[in-house]
Length: 95
Image 1: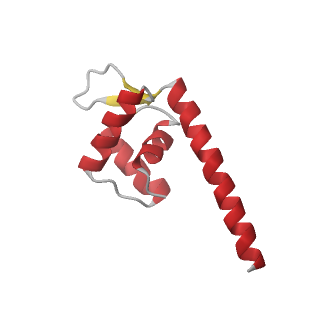
Image 2: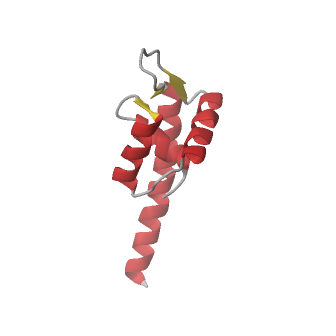
Image 3: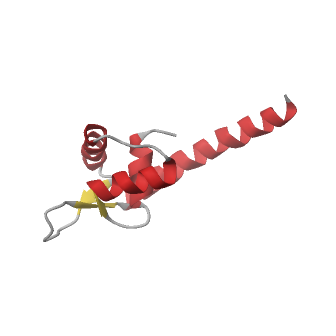
């Protein structure tokens, strides 16, 4: 799984994070290292869709939070991926 959109949303699902914290979290839970260009490109797209939003902070780094519509989108995509996963695993057992 290497879709930056899903990875960023999944990272933010348990709380707000700034970019570097997202990169580290994604590396831990998915084993995928997103480069800065890929990460910040995904952040820009996610903001444009209204799926994440910047959070006010006094820190130098800009934290982001998932929105309600971002959470719904993530749930829909994960449900679809789960269906593919279950189908593939079932087919492998019968192969």
